[in-house]
Image 1 (cartoon, protein in one colour):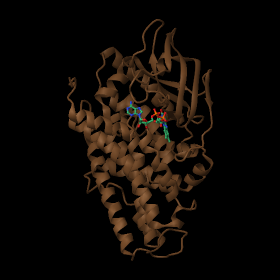
Image 2 (tube, helix red, strand yellow; image 1 turned 90 degrees about the vertical axis):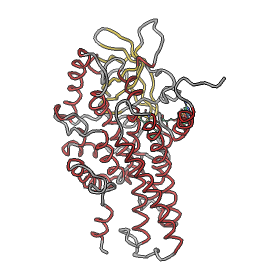
Image 3 (cartoon, rainbow, N blue to C red; image 1 turned 90 degrees about the horizontal axis):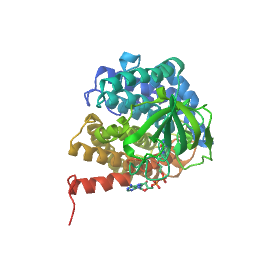
Image 4 (cartoon, rainbow, N blue to C red; image 1 turned 120 degrees about the vertical axis):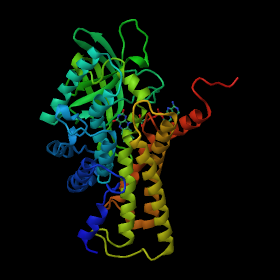
Length: 422
Ligand SMILES: Cc1cc2nc3c(=O)[nH]c(=O)nc-3n(C[C@H](O)[C@H](O)[C@H](O)COP(=O)(O)OP(=O)(O)OC[C@H]3O[C@@H](n4cnc5c(N)ncnc54)[C@H](O)[C@@H]3O)c2cc1C
C-alpha cells in the first residue's frame, strides 16, 4: 500500500453515512471536517502542543469554510447544524488536533446553546423576541468578522459541577451589568474576541441563586478584563486555558446569550448540552486506533516500513482496541442521537454512561496503543504521544467528569426524585 492508499484508509469517516444512516447534509459536513482537519489542523498540531500556544490560524481558516457558523441557525445565515450533526463533525476534527476541536467546541456552544437549544426551551413571547434580536448581534459578528467566542464557566469551586451559584457576579446597572469575578481554565484565553461567561445575576441585598445564572458575551478588550497565570499542562496544551479576571467590567444588556433564567432551565431540561465536550475525545479514540493499525502494518509516513502485525499478541491487542472502540462509538452515537428537551430518565443515565465511556476509553485506547506499538511510537515526532496526553484530560472536565457520571448513575438508578432512606 502506498501513502495515498494509507491516507484514504485513515480518512474513512468515524461514522460511515450508510452504516449510521446519516443525511446528505451530515455526510457533507463530516467530509468537510476530515478534509479541513487533515489539511490545516494536523500539520500545525505538534508545534502548538510543544509550545503551548493557541492555534488561532486554525480559527481564521475556519471562517471562510463556514465552520465558525456551523450551529448558527439557517434563518440567521449559518449552517444550521443540530446537536447530533455538530457532534459528528467535531469528532472528525478531534482526530487531527484535540486542542483545536476542544476549543472550537467552546466557540460553537455559544451558538448552539443560544440557537437550537434555546429554541426548545420555554420563554415568554417578549423574552423570545428580545433573545432572537440579541443573538443576531452575536451571529453577525461571527459570520461577518469571524469573531471567536470562549466559554469560561469553571471557578475552582463547586459551581462548575452545578452544586452552587457561580461566584462570578453580574450586578444590574444602567444599560447592563457590572461584572466581577474569576474564571479558571478558560480555553482560548488571550485569543478569543468574546468570553461567554456564566455568572450569577445578583442585585444589591439579593441572595445568590443558581436560578439567576446569566450567560454573557464579554468583549475580551473590555476595560477590567485580564488574563493571568501560566499554562504548562500535561495535555490539550494548545487550548491555552489560563485564568480570567473581571474587575468592575461594564457589560451591556445585549451581551446576554440567553434570557434571564434560561440557562438554569437548559441545564435541567436539556442535560445533553454538557455532552458537547465528548466529540473531541471520540475523535482522539479513533485516531489512537488508526495510528496503531497503520503502525503495525508498517505504514506510518516517515517511519521505516517495518511490519509488526504478525505477532499474535499484537493482533489480540488490536482486537481488544477495536472492541472498545466499537462499544464507545455505539453508545456515544445512541446518546447524541437522543439528545432533546425533557429526555427520559433512561436517556439521561445513558448520556452519563456515554460521557464516562468516551472520556475513559479514549485514554484507555491511547494507553494500549502505546503499549502495543512500542517505544518508538511514543517519540514526539509521531502524534500518538500527544493523543495519549490529550486523551487524559477528558475525564477531568466539569460538569460531567467521569467520577460525577458514576456518582449520578449510581444515585439516580437507585433513588427516584425525592426518595430518601429513613
Ligand atoms: C484542557 C482543559 C480545558 C478546559 N477548558 C475549559 C473551558 O474552556 N472553560 C471552562 O469553564 N473550564 C474548562 N476546563 C475546566 C474543567 O471543566 C474543570 O473545571 C477543571 O478541570 C476542574 O478542575 P479542578 O481541579 O478545579 O476540579 P475540582 O472541582 O477540584 O474537582 C476535582 C474532581 O473532583 C470531582 N468532583 C468535583 N465536584 C464534585 C461533586 N459535586 N460530586 C462528585 N465529585 C465531584 C470531579 O471528578 C473532579 O474531577 C478545562 C479543563 C481542561 C483539562
